[in-house]
Image (cartoon, rainbow, N blue to C red; front, side, top):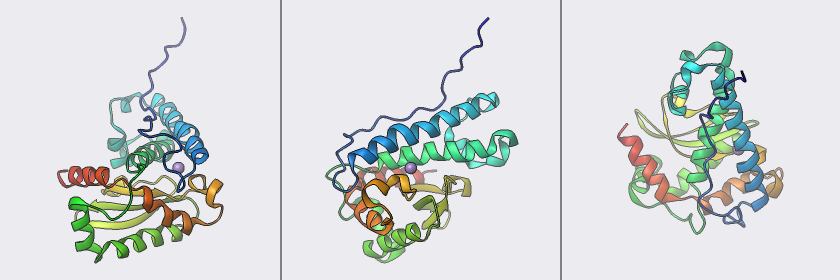
Amino acid sequence: MATEVKAAVFEVPALTYAYEALEPYIDAQTMHVHHDKHHQAYVDNANAAIAKAPELSGKSAEEILKDLSKVPESVRTALRNNVGGHVHHAIFWSIMAPNAGGAPTGPIADAITKTFGDFAQFQEKLNDAGVKQFGSGWTWLALGPSGLQVLSTPNQDSPISQGLHPILGNDVWEHAYYLKYQNRRAEYLKAWWNVVNWAEVNKRYEAALKK
Ligand code: MN3
């Protein structure tokens, strides 16, 4: 009898806009490779790790990341990297949109002003954390017990594993920007604000406030 094929647990969400929709800030080729290849690899590797730890198959990605000490040691690193990679990229695609960017609106605008002084100071803080993240990682706006904070994480380590709710994040792995910006990470970080989908960021913020 053939080995039973386990259903995939995680799937790469389809983009809600065209690959070229974020031009000229993020080029279509980068979007193709990043979404179809990199994100797919995180999903495939996460599913392969889950298949080795069937007791986790009912858990959500967030539940797994929330307390990695509770997952089997044999798959812990694989899950940290690949479930993290999956969750982070799913957030990333959703908080970008064409004809977006500009100043934030809604409750997140007020919270940013209250926490960081104004939007420009917040942008500078997030960009700075992204530039200073040595090697690969992410720069984040997250909600924690003491309110909003900016942080960076290496590799695919998740703010969720620190008890935080990621509200907005930018990918500073070279695969996110190298084709268009090469070594100019700061230029990419600056351009990225033109594609931030504040409507979705507000949804994430309001959902996080209720958690
Ligand atoms: Mn990436």
